[in-house]
Amino acid sequence: MSGRLLKCLKPVILSILLFHFLIIKSSAISLDGEALLSFKTAIVSSDGVFEQWRQEDPDPCRWKGVKCDPNNRVIYLSLPRHRLSGSISPDIGMLNHLKFLALHNNNFYGTIPSSLSNCSELQSLFLQGNYLSGLIPAELGNISELENLDISSNSFSGSIPSSLGGLTKLSAFNVSNNFLTGPIPSEGEFNKFSENSFSGNRGLCGKQINVACKDEPGGSAESQPPFSGNDAGTKRSGKYSARLLISALATVGALLLVALMCFWGCFLYKKFGKTDSQSLAVDVGGGASVVMFHADFHYSSKDVIKKLETLNDEHIIGSGGFGTVYKLAMDDGNVFALKRIVKTNEGLDRFFERELEILGSIKHRYLVNLRGYCNSPSSKLLIYDYLPGGSLDDALHEKAEQLDWDARLNILMGAAKGLAYLHHDCSPRIIHRDIKSSNILLDGNLEARVSDFGLAKLLEDEESHITTIVAGTFGYLAPEYMQSGRATERTDVFSFGVLMLEVLSGKRPTDSSFIEKGLNIVGWLNFLVAENRQREIVDPHCEGMREESLDTLLAIAIQCVSSNPEDRPTMHRVVQVLESEVMTPCPSDFYDSSSD
Image 1: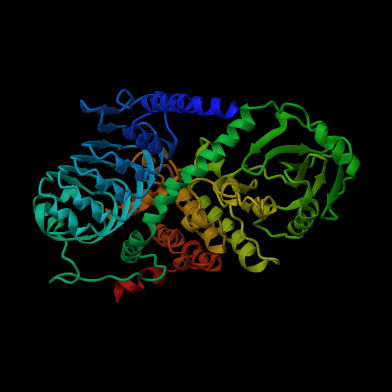
Image 2: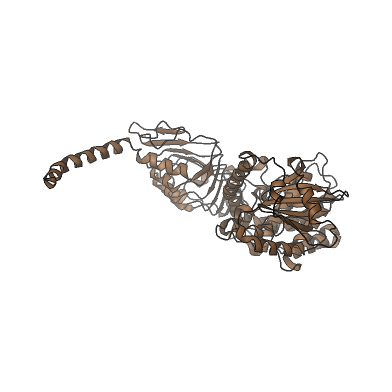
């Protein structure tokens, strides 16, 4: 009986399922909507422009920035100046009726997807003012309807594809302010575009910009000299480096936005997501012990713990990726800095303590001295010497009184010597992984001390490989470190090069004056080099600047931030050049080459 009943009900069940499927299908978003949702998914941050982009809509035609034809096919996508950060999804190529695409003046990074060539009806493409890098896809030459193409103020490298010359309807074209090299194509529509379409690309040549290519009459090849303080040497160095470094560098300036968003989100959560105004008594109450590394630290564990229990938010003097820093004043007037690091893995205690003992054994004039630590149940409390001058970041960007030229050179010299010691002379050798201005501390005489060395390795999570976020700071990381997460001495050298530019210019690596143009501090330098205006990088408020030492510093910095790690000098070499050609320059060193 049940078998017959099931047989009778089978058509009814199938009809119900079919009806249900049709209802779901009729309410599902269109294929163009799916493509736009994929585009949205690849974006990691925005100003909220996507709030009305909903999966449950039958089509995307009422979404902000989207327009459709009478058949509800997307023909228009315009989202300029919405702080969009992320890559451009290849699924955008599924919008095969798209005629207008404007994503300019955002923070897009990565490459232009070659699938964009599937948008065969595309007439206008505006991607200027982003962080896009890599090669210009030759496939763009297949979009026969293209009339307007603007990809200026990005970080594209390589040559201009000759296939673009086949775009017979192209009336407006702009690739200025990139890092393109090689001859400008002369076929097709390229003969009608002015010099402004190609300016700011130091490696381009062609009749459109009145620069002869090296294979043509009047053309010549130039090579890069070693460190040189003279102006001609700096120009040659800049020309060589401009080809190598910025395609990856602005990818750093852009890809690093991912790291920035992660770091910023964590910071906001820690700062606003929970209250932490209690004293440190909860950390040092039961089971706490104090370990000291130096015999000249004449305080008992009881004395230290008693002081720790009185600390609260009023004693905070700094915070960063590794923890909060408190000012610890002892009863006899001596002052120390206490860095509080929250434990994340109890199983790493023995490793943690062993590494701290190694760090505590390292003493150098240009390193911050680790005195000891308090091992508490919920956190590590590291005790350092207190430096009254604060951080280089504060001295450069927060204080009304500006550092003069000699002070800046002296700070760079000290930081270089401290980092060189870590790389080459201490045992074991240490890769810092987070060189930045806030990790260069100053004593009362503005002498530099490198801080937080060894902490990146100490806090590394071997399973999740999070060191590119924990150890990295937006604007300072080398491109290969961002891509692989593998730190080397050369990644520290890159960060030191960025630090040099920060000290010379008085601007942070992500200053708004150039980041809004799709550049970071290194991109800005190379833009100035391309215009032969590299000396303009100097902070106008800096007194006592000497041009001969500036040229040498720029030459060093350019090599330090090369996108090719093998082209970067060692820190020993940096110290050597700073000592011989900057701190005590000899006139013959600067002018021998120009007198030949």
